[in-house]
Image 1 (cartoon, rainbow, N blue to C red):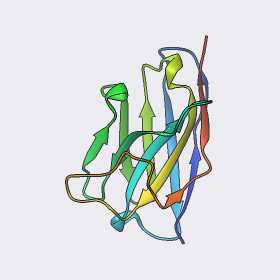
Image 2 (image 1 turned 120 degrees about the vertical axis):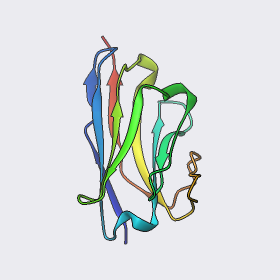
Image 3 (image 1 turned 90 degrees about the vertical axis):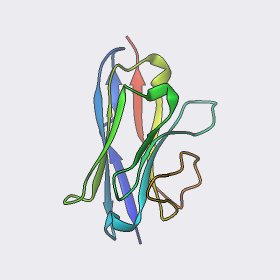
Length: 125
């Protein structure tokens, strides 16, 4: 059974950066796409980014140029580098896994089958 654990969240000032980690266990990532999602209070969960096993990446327009997704296959860990943070980036960040993807597509809708517990990111001065 695939398990995901997020870490790396915290309180950061506007313009700051964090590196979020999604450590996976139970299987390797070679057959899973990983997505990052976030949910602000009172709002729906939204897709931020995703990555396929062959390295295809996709980003929401709101984070393009500021966020970078990457994977360390040796550690079975996916990272989300979040930079130039804005107050509207505040929320609980979740990683998730799915076997539904292609070589040039991954889903940024929250329809994934495996989810972590989330890590809080607060952007405030």
